[in-house]
View 1 (cartoon, rainbow, N blue to C red):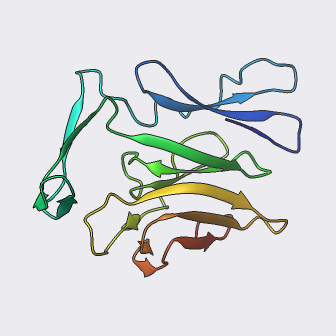
View 2: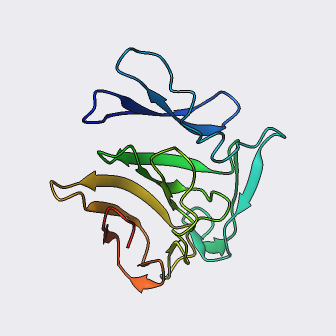
Length: 171
């Protein structure tokens, strides 16, 4: 994904073939900004599939019973969307956790490093079925406020059923 910044540079969110996610900054000249330091934000699973098993509450219409189901995925984290703010800071969302950041949402500082002041419970989900919470989409308004939608019932410990808003500073 690519997001333009007012100074003519761009932030690029990329996931390589091993599932490693990072954000790069491209200068107006087209060169990658070597001072933008996001590095690998979260790593994919390089050891084969991750097995996830549901609880025993999924109805099987063939057998007429409730059962647990197993599914394999090759990545232990998923990146969904990001927004870039005019100062080159960014918010990212999905089903991942960057070290020291809340689950499912992260804030990068203008130099690409993780904002260590952006902490809390992250995205959580409480509902009838067990589910992994995740962010789906981020938006940005003219005031710099960030809007998050997804499958979650709370964000950073506050009730927010599927929708939340942050200031550019992440509060």
